[in-house]
Amino acid sequence: MVVDSKTAKVLGDIREQGIAHGVAIVTEVGRGFISDSGGAGAVVVFDLESYPVLGKVVAQPGVDGIPYDPILSTESWPSQATRK
Image (cartoon, rainbow, N blue to C red; front, side, top):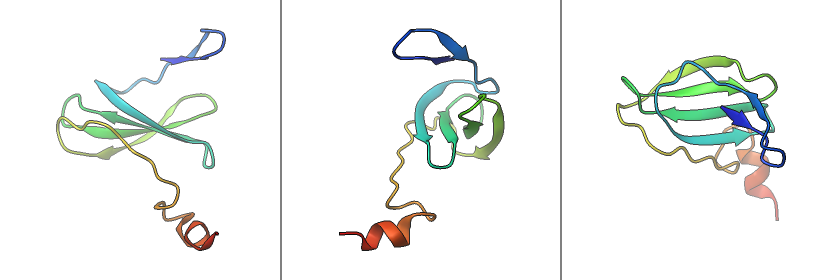
């Protein structure tokens, strides 16, 4: 479930997940990532605009938190690593 933190209004629901343990939001690419420890384990990829599930990445059973570091992402690493 997606809830607006200022108004507490329910904005949408992200289906196709079992047990969510962590969420990473990457506004630069308009995607969110949920670590799903239900079943075989997966990372659920969803769109930040209307919340449909775009795909799943296989993970280990019991997958837990999900960190995001823009410096380590392959898209931004060269430019971020050289900034002062």
